[in-house]
Length: 428
Ligand SMILES: Cc1cc2nc3c(=O)[nH]c(=O)nc-3n(C[C@H](O)[C@H](O)[C@H](O)COP(=O)(O)OP(=O)(O)OC[C@H]3O[C@@H](n4cnc5c(N)ncnc54)[C@H](O)[C@@H]3O)c2cc1C
Image (cartoon, rainbow, N blue to C red; front, side, top):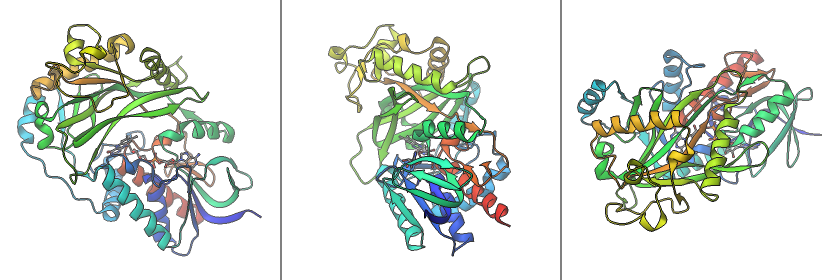
């Protein structure tokens, strides 16, 4: 006989944790199982862990308005007890931006760093276990048999009262296949495509006043995920549904405990929304990722702004000399020509935003600044829910970045709480 739990959660990222804590508080005697295919709990909390507590950062407007987001952010704050970072001189930057038609958003942020995020994730998981939840790491969900309320994993079959599926961005393919099998209609038409810039902190000093400054430029371009202190660019390996691999770059930083490296990195992303006849924004973005791999000999591309401006590719032998005066933190990356790889409409919008940014914060386009490509954020797979609590099929909820209900830690956590409200309402 399959083991039974009142609530089974796939994914121990912030969405899964938000659901687990909310359910535990409402039903202290109810049984909870969390599974995660990773051997380390928990998902995206372990990547730099900047948390944003201001709408609309991280909250897709299709599902959230300010009123709803603020209500759940209150619960998230109460659980995570963030230390909100102070900001200085915002008026100066905001005025410069406004004159150029750029908006600087004032966002309540905390920052734990990658090491702090891992510690928080561990503490949260341990707290859940102490409160009676079962957490199984290294276990992969494979399928759901809806009529029998069974989750099938690589180890066993589990009977659930309610099922929350929160597999994050790395679980896109799994979620898509599941939705196809469960006949949950979904759309997948929005992607973010862009670059990650790495600069000397002296050339982007705003980060001393505002840890993760959020600029919104014309043509749907924005800054995203700024890291400074001990900051590094990283590459993440993804696979499309057919198992073809590609890399997306990303960034993270360690908490203030270590030695600073004097560098800062952040993404400039353009949101692209496709309409018919394109069926899948994800496939489009994945193909761009694979094309970059082709050009980079299996690695992402990097180019100094100095070379880009002159319309020439960067080369390994010229990558670190004279004005190109710092070593890239992502070593496994190929010097090349981003203009050859990135679609021109996206590149033009991003280059224009870079020039606007350099007018607001003069220096960021120093010749040494490195552009890494591609940074791809997939936000597709938005299921057509049957209610506002993200119920996709009776008894089955789909939440977090994988299901498009969030684009960040706090909104993912909020999605978990909102799903549990639906679960409790359904049980009444
Ligand atoms: C490098 C990086 C840096 C980031 N930095 C920030 C930041 O500073 N601030 C911020 O707000 N957001 C940041 N994000 C985004 C943030 O991580 C996500 O918004 C958030 O983690 C989404 O939460 P989630 O619970 O939906 O998914 P995740 O956190 O991705 O968790 C999903 C979990 O599900 C598991 N899983 C997937 N498929 C299966 C399966 N079939 N069976 C079992 N388990 C499965 C995965 O192993 C994973 O642990 C960053 C993301 C990355 C990649």
